[in-house]
Image 1 (spheres, rainbow over the protein chains, first blue to last red):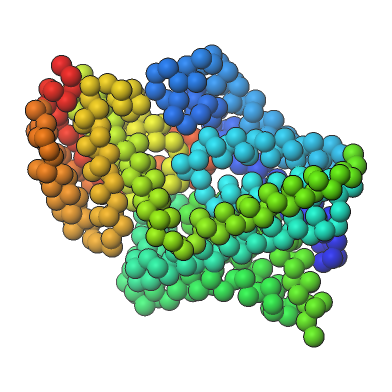
Image 2: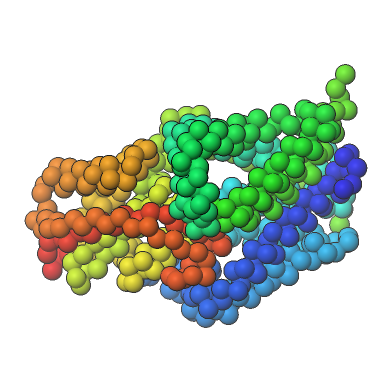
Length: 269
Length: 192
C-alpha cells in the first residue's frame, strides 16, 4: 500500500481493485456467451418493441459475437489497468472502461446496484485524477469524491435497513439465507429458530453500516479493523447473496478512505 | 498530456460536486417527493413485468420480492424467460390492448404498497387479491371486456446466472418468490 498521502498512487490502487472486479465480472458474463442474444447486452432499454433503435441495428451487431467482443475487450482493458505499472496507456484504458460503464449503467438503468454506481464513480475519479499534469488538489478531490460515495453507500444502506421492519425484526436476513439462490437453508433455519440471533445479526449489519463512516476518525488499529470487517462483510455477501462485484467495488473505495483517515489523523490535535 | 487549463479542472470539480449532491438526494430518504418518484419508478417496473398474449387473450404480471427485483436482468428478458412468450409490452402500449395495459400498470403501482409490507406469504397473497379485485371493481368505465379470471400462483423460483432460464444479469440475478397473476381478458381489451 502506498503512503497515505500519495493521492496519485491511491487513485491507481482504487482503479486496480475496481478493474480486478470488472475483469472477473466480464469474464463471467462472457462465459455465458450462448445467451448473449441480440439486445441482451447491447441495445437500449425500451428497444424491445417494434420500431425502436435496436430494430435498425443488425442483430449480429447486438448479440453474439459483438457482445462477446465487448466483454472480452472490457476484461482485457481491466487486466491492463491491473497489470500495467504506469504510462499513459492506463489512462486510455481507464477512459475506455469509463465509457463502457456509462453505457452499461444506462443500458441496465432499471437494475443498477450500488456496485454499478461505485464502479462509475471510481472509474470517473481515477480516469481524470491519474492524468499526468493535473493538480494535487484535483487528485485529492477525486479521492474525496470516491470516499464520500463509499461512506454514503454504507450509511444509506444502513438507514434503509433500519427503516424496514422486516430487517429490524431479522426476518429479512433469515429470508435471504433460506431463499436466495446462493442460499444457506441450514443457517437460515437455525437463525429462524433463534429469532433473537437473527435480530441481533440484522441490527449489527445495519448499525455497522450506519456507523462505518466513523471508522475514518478512529486510531489506525481501529480503522484497519473496520476495513477488515468491511472486507469480511463483502466476502460474506459474495458467498451468501451472490454479489461478488460488491466486494471489488467497495474494496476499491478503501484506498480513498485510507487517504482521508491519514488526513484526519494529521489534523487531529 | 498536460492538463494546464484550469478551466478543465474547475469543470471536473463542478461535475464531482454536482454528482455528490445528486447522490445525497437520491441515496437518502430526505424528501417525500423522492419517495414518490421511487415508488412511481417501481410501479413502472412492475408494469414492465406485464406480458400480453393477445392471441390467447391473456395477460400476466409477475410480482417479485421488491428487494430482489432490482437485481434481475432487464424485465423483458425475464418475462420472456418465465412466460416463454415474446416480450410485447411496448407493442401493447400502442395497440388496442392499451386499456388493459394501463390497468395493469396501475395495479402494479398499488401492489407496491402490498409488497412493501411485512406479511406472511398467505396474507400477502390475500392482500394482492384484494388490490386486484378492488381495481377491477372500481374501473370506470367498466371495460366491455372484463377480466374473467385471476389466477394467483405463488412460487419459489431460484435462478442463477447461466442457469435455465438463461439470464444475463451481471452474474447477480437472483430471484426469490414469484407471484403470478393471470388475467384472462375480454375480447374488447384485445381489440378483436
